[in-house]
Image 1 (cartoon, rainbow, N blue to C red):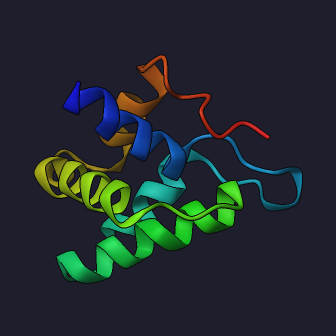
Image 2: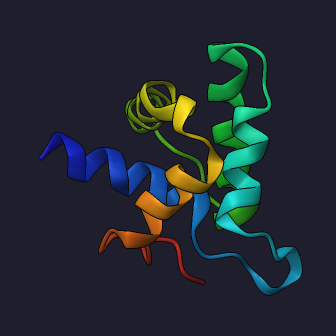
Image 3: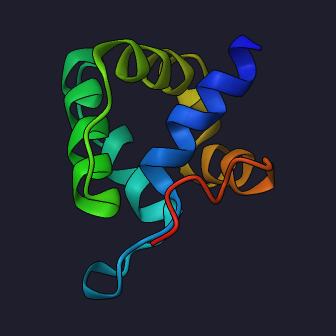
Length: 95
């Protein structure tokens, strides 16, 4: 259940993009991973969700998404993005 919630949060971060702001999931994850600290990466997750999905995550959702990114960031942006794309929750944010 926790894993599903984490994927849901991350799916919100990196999936569907409005027509005016085309960006791939890898680009969004790369933007997050490029930040130097966990706090900065967490803030970037919030910015990516706001930009790509036109919504904000709750503090709890943001914490879960951040924990997922922190625990898997060594695997790289492509791997993280692929995990999100392969989940059935990858369409949570389609506009």
